[in-house]
Image 1: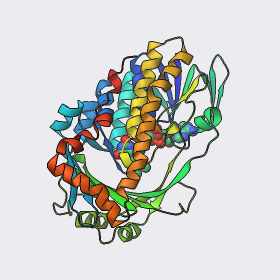
Image 2: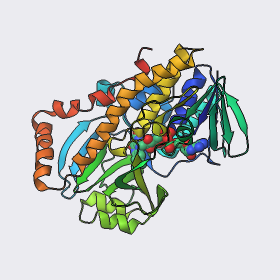
Image 3: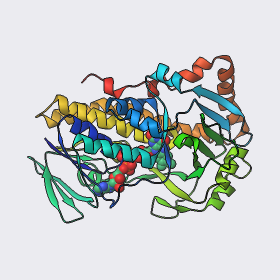
Image 4: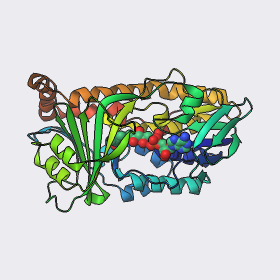
Length: 396
Ligand SMILES: Cc1cc2nc3c(=O)[nH]c(=O)nc-3n(C[C@H](O)[C@H](O)[C@H](O)COP(=O)(O)OP(=O)(O)OC[C@H]3O[C@@H](n4cnc5c(N)ncnc54)[C@H](O)[C@@H]3O)c2cc1C
């Protein structure tokens, strides 16, 4: 079977590896002229790492990663710790894989190399602009003028998916009311403010920040999310102003303030999501990752879900060769419930992180703080359903 994948992001490249390793002929079409990622970090939770381990790339990723010993939540202004969940070796024992922080460029570079090793072909500068299921095959039209036919098309082309628009649904992305500031800063100069073994979410009224070390502690990744009435530009990503970030987080705990001050440049992202799709596939065309179920990043799971989707899709196509309708139906059934649950949980985290009133903060963070001290197993068990899942072990 010849499979075309639109998009060489995290989801598209993972699907390319998973499909090519199972003997499918894979062609990936990427709109960008050069395969590079935004200068930012990414957290890969154990559920994502289990799939990447099963694909044989986990160890290569770990070489480039920082592996946190704990995930913490702290009050943004006072810096007081609310709770801490052990990771490191404990993640291996509890969830069956590591929790890793990577620079996105390093992740893409490892995935790309593995896709090539598996035999996938990649065409850059080729935006998929048309997609039509002709019954026996799918015809795709490319921005470089090319027209090609395949047995199957996978739309892994992100939030503003052309494949989704052309074949699956005519819906629009929705502004979530939040924008994210992103930057990567050198750790040297932060004077040991960061424990390289910790990833921290700092919570406060109407905003939160996430900090974690990258590249063995040489860099620190910063994401600051604030609520905004508008998103000013139609573009969903634009160069941002470090002075504005500093203003937004003025008066916050020293590690947050000093990290922002160490930033030379930043990006501002308007955060969008979409309503869940009734159907993920039509005929010989299907979707995965953000093209299918984009979610706000408040659970750090968008890429993890794309990675799990990629494995599940390859698994279902492999198990039902010659029956693409049955395979795509099985893929959708396998993934829909979990991705919806994760999306709901990501949305709920915004409310938890952004509590405005003192009473609401006390009612939310008080029991967490108490459980962390008196019954830590409650706090540690909260992510079991998410991180403990092993898509690579699901029986087809
Ligand atoms: C601030 C922020 C922090 C985040 N942190 C995390 C985190 O820590 N952990 C986590 O798991 N997730 C995180 N996410 C979510 C994660 O980045 C996305 O869910 C993930 O990148 C989705 O991968 P994808 O491959 O589906 O789509 P994308 O990464 O959007 O890739 C799509 C690719 O398709 C290409 N493309 C687009 N249109 C076309 C076309 N028509 N033809 C050909 N190519 C096309 C694009 O150029 C791109 O290369 C975060 C998101 C944000 C905004």
